[in-house]
Image (cartoon, rainbow, N blue to C red):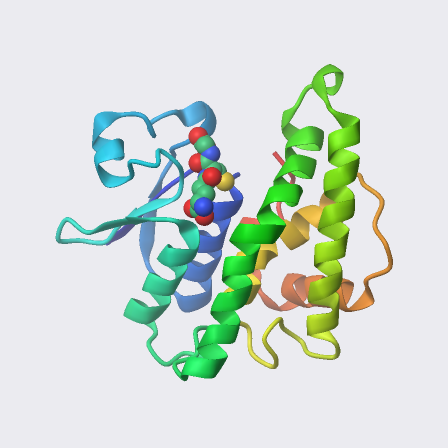
Length: 209
Ligand SMILES: N[C@@H](CCC(=O)N[C@@H](CS)C(=O)NCC(=O)O)C(=O)O
């Protein structure tokens, strides 16, 4: 059976758990990362020299790290042809572009804001840095706002891996105690995920920790 290594409070683990629920993928999970440690143990480093979570094991000595790569692998191996990861080159490229953008652009400023408010003691918080990161994040969310328009999901009418990659940061954006500009399409998208996707409610839209 598929094994997922990683603590449930990790945004990157959340993506994998949500996808497993979305596709009905049976799996077991083991805590690792943060207070659980494990990621620097030799057996873990042998699977994932990056010493981060998530990592998956999927039989035959196969292991994989990097959450977005894991999501692509699970969609390819468990649900080929599913709209969640379109097979045709152009729609697939558009989904992958947003996944890459999450890693290369959105993740940085969102992580600064999240760590400041949730994981850093008040006396140690750099409020100037977090204000700058919030501004950067809002400018990036405005791109998603424009992309969404009247569409229900990031890449159109069907939920895709793009929604999964962005989802944990979307929840944080609305759950963090920060100011937020008017982004009505973004809010509609968040409400839709909450309403229609049990995996999003269970694994992603959880109290921040
Ligand atoms: N780009 C990687 C990032 C992995 C990552 O930074 N994971 C964090 C949790 S979100 C981590 O392992 N932090 C250290 C820890 O939990 O011990 C991915 O998408 O999987």
